[in-house]
Image 1 (cartoon, rainbow, N blue to C red):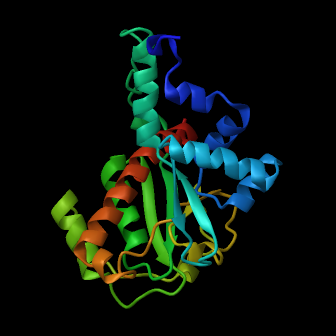
Image 2 (image 1 turned 180 degrees about the vertical axis):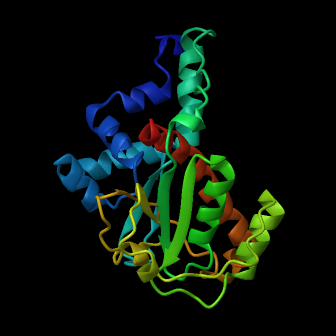
Length: 252
């Protein structure tokens, strides 16, 4: 069969029922294999096999857990999915391209409250808080906290927000998770594998998600320093931008 008659690779990957289920689960949160096994009800060997196909296809990535080094968290690359889906439509007909989402009327909808959590509240979660405020344009209220907060924000976290995004958080200080316990949130997102294990319950059962993001202040020396903060900030910014349509759906 001619290659031009073959279905695009994204469609061949996503068309399998279990792989589609895995993509649907990972679009909400990063998960470990055993969690995906529990959520799909399928054997671990089968889940692992299809995860490997999704990884080989570039749709899913895996990072070693900082809480338990024997585990890995799987993450869906939504930018890669969006590009692949757009290419698949164009392969059928050039007119089949994605249309931008309609603008949100801020006057007719409430602001969604989002809490970001990591251990020290000195890098990952305050970066996410700042970027959501920056990207949301008043559509969301963001706050962050830590299970064991540091005394101050990491200087490189302050620097990367200023240099890469024009955001000034120099006067912000880390806060303890206890200071927000009892408040109502629509979404609670952990960014640290360790902090994920201790995030408390909140009133009205907010949606929960986990972003398995390495601590830019830790790790091997060749991957530490300011470049690590640039990589982490870019990752968080991508996730925040992809979160916005989800928050808009909550608002409507």
